[in-house]
Image (cartoon, rainbow, N blue to C red; front, side, top):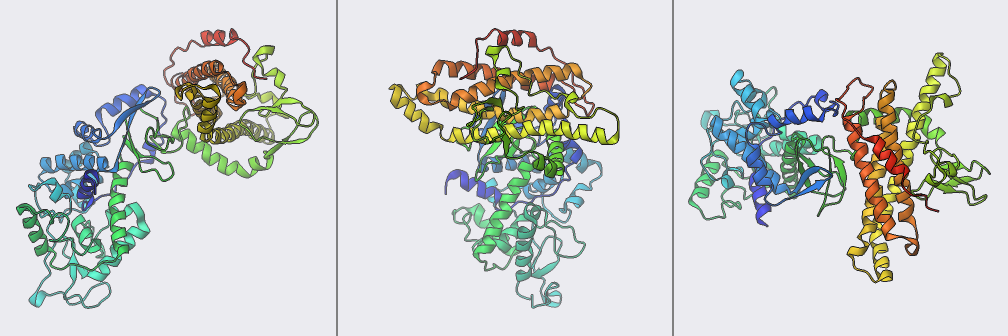
Length: 604
């Protein structure tokens, strides 16, 4: 076992977790005023109080800081999260003179905010009762962290099994003999070892992460099951004096093991399933901590075990390097969705689910050629279509003639704009209004869906990029660095498709009466779409027809428009919900002049 894995296990071997009711209102908050959000988080971090410096120094030892745009983040391991949890619990333990296990339970009850914990703890004293640790006893730990955090916490004694007249004769769950194997939490309610094992394992199996708040099986008893009892019931047979901690021949570990044997006089035979349940319990405790942290989040990538830690103002991060390269939102865990906020994304997803049958009925997987009506399937990422029958070239998004989209013809890229006059009816009847709203929704959904499909194609193309890079290197006799532009360009196409997809969520909820803001936004959106289409076509060219300089230049310009769109949407637009951020000046005129003065970017 590596040193990091050993330290993680030492911490996870036994501590408790408690539920904190997370407000939906807090999660639904629109993320428009970044300056205000940043100011708030400077004073209240995910752990609260003044523990952030310690957590940061601990977690960053094995991680490396990386940047996504202007955002700093770091990939950390599970063991680093355990160290951060230990640091927070140790601080509270010393401050309140309670055991580390009790301190962690109180922190979980306060949503891992030390400020919230201290306020509740000193104001009315009900937090300990609500969390279920009011029956726990003991002060701050004096033993080594490695001993205490492994579940051998002598400051939370488990009741001794009564003897004599008060001896436990039968289990109150199964009514079987419990004279030799009765166990109890600090509350003193005894049950047989078999029922306790079944109870805890069933909690893990049925409740998942909620098992960290498991209480005593006794009816109406709210005592939290302490971690050393979890370890004893579900752990290995040698969890006592022959555990991996006891294996270290130290006087202190021997003393703690003796105390544990006094409190828990019997060891339980367990099978592999119970050990797996115990491992899940330990994992759920880390998950619980991460879920309530504003700075930590599991990477949602398939089979990825990385944890990302980012600053309070960071929205989108990437599991990179040494990760799965998944780009996701730090707040909600969904795929990165800038410029749309988490609240807008949820509203859009709900609307798409409600409208899915209508949308799917109207939007087929194929479209007819506007000229010869031959059905055409879009099998590449570019929206520039060419009919195989009549050779007619058109735009997949708006079905208009492609000649109207090229910069060389002086055309204007209009298919990103919604024109309400295209609706068949313009009267004020309920039917007409419903039809116009459906027409408006389909306008945005079609383009959202189109960029989503193009993004999936770009991701497949990116997966095959390394092979193309090898071929290009061999054909040009260049170095590996010389062909990196191809990977960079493909990654840029993926990022742009993902962002453009989200711009149609943002645009759908943009206040229809905010004409100036909508015009600015559509202008930015139009420019990014134009360059994305150009870059997409360039990356799909045969290698012998690809111009490295052109690809590099278009990639750089496209990246600039990508950043401009996100910044403009976050800082200078008005959402239909009524939230109006402070507008910041965007020199769109200069950008437009730059685009107009560029040479033709059409690829033929």
